Each structure stands twice: as structure tokens, then as C-alpha cells.
Length: 142
Image (cartoon, rainbow, N blue to C red):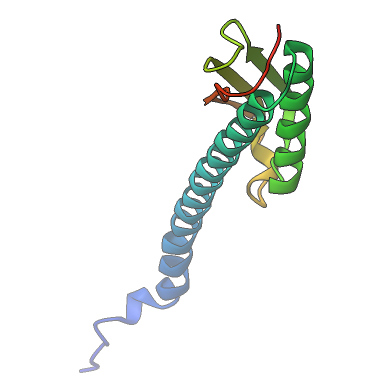
């Protein structure tokens, strides 16, 4: 009588099992990287809004506040390497004056394809808001 090995019908199954486990694991890793990069971009956008609000609060006029905020946001996003499809900066100077506040909102269409090395289409809308207090002991005019 010849004896057959109990595993003789499973020859070559180890590479197949490896592929079946590796592909989903790589997809999970790519998703985790994408989620982390989106959170990082959101933090960078929040920092840009904070810088814009601070720059606007130091301006002497509302026109200068709008310009300073836009420049600060653009510089901050460039430095952080955040790639947006159109950045919108809105500055609320209705309470602009000594002791008042300046609010800056920044909206960005974050290109998802720039976040992971895979061809992922589309973009994700993210936004941030920050408020800064205008120094009450300095002169500001509307």
C-alpha cells in the first residue's frame, strides 16, 4: 500500500494564501495613510487660518486686514505643502476695532491623489476657522 501525504493536494497554496492576505493588507495600509494625510492637511489648514487671523488682527484697516490674511494663509499652506484645488479665504471684519475680533475662514478642495502614491481620483472639501482679538490699545480703523 502506498501512503499519500496528507498535504499532497495542497501543493502551491502557500503563495496563493500570501497574495490573498497581502493585497487586502496593502489596501488597509493605503487607507490608513490617506486618512492620516487628510488629518495632517486639516491641521495645516487650521494653522493657516490661525496665521491669517493673527495677521489680520495686526492690520490697521479692514482692507489691509483682508490682504494680510490672504497672504498669510497662502504662505502658510505653501510652506506646509498642502495642495488645494482652489483656496477660499474669507475675512470677517465687522467687529474690527480696538478690542474687537477678526474671523478668518479658509476652505480648500484637497486633492486626494496628492496624498497617497495610488491613483485615487477626486478631492475632499476641508475648512477651518480662527478668531483673533484686535489689541485694544492700538489704533485701528474701518
